Image (cartoon, rainbow, N blue to C red; front, side, top):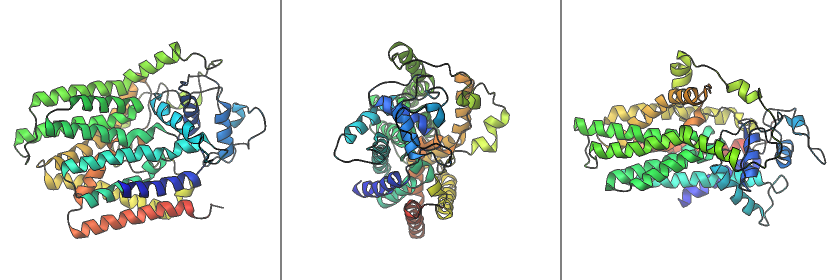
Length: 446
């Protein structure tokens, strides 16, 4: 963990301090959530954009948007800086912001001043490393349970940390920063319960908390459900070489707990959030009518057809969850993108090779099957969820699958069994890590 901490901090802190523009992935609205969450307040649809939010945006600029005006003195008109009437993204539950915001505020009170202007946002971005390290700790514990080669597990963790989607999620203000720890915690709780036959309370807690941080974290819960199904199949076929398989009644009980967590991720937390928005936090100032805002126009009331559910642009969008839908200018460099693409192809090959090689003989092989299956069905489930609960269509993208990253890391580590594979994986990881550092250290683009 000391080694992982050092490598993650070097990469992520460097990225946060060098790549300061606001991300195109809705970070301009997540910043407003963060600033309210730092005071344990909740965002309301149509509420006025905070002045500090606007100043963060105009001081930093937005990636690939040269038309954001410079900051002016005095009061800033949010509409002049691209905000449409008021807040129009409030679908995220507030728990990530309630954790990250207050901690960032405490850190800002220290003598250390971070640009621009001792920014709360910069502190929050740095805390993305803490979320990731908590997830990597859980992955290391999972590796101990599954007896994964320790050195290869560390290499696979570093590879994941340097991939475009995860590096982006952990260096901006985003609920996606909670994905790895949420997915890893529920998987660790599931494996611990299966090995000892007790600890369902921890499984329930991990699943419900993970679902509370972000609905997308429900994919980590789906992975465990699929893992349980394959374990039952392995037991029925008498292929497993361990004695940890539980009776089907035990898996049914654990599965029911996970289904409840999935409901909370898919709809329950949204209902609770809407209730407290309308009944508890009602002092956000004048509420504007934002009907027809750009977000609603892009995603609202759109029916999904067959190809939106099962097309190639849906089914394979999270296999693996490495790519980044919005590369910052610094990471559009051909070196980093080429190496990242090579890592993506390696992960795809591993996710197919390990299940074919090991069948259902061990827990690691079953986890490989579960991870591959989850990444293939998760995009379709995402479209289905949005259609059922909100009547909207949101094109699945790579970062939506980050909660399945712990399974990917374990499978990659298990794949490197011979000396050549271990050297090749270590070399690829080193090149990816160094290239990620290089592209943010090099001279800015002209």
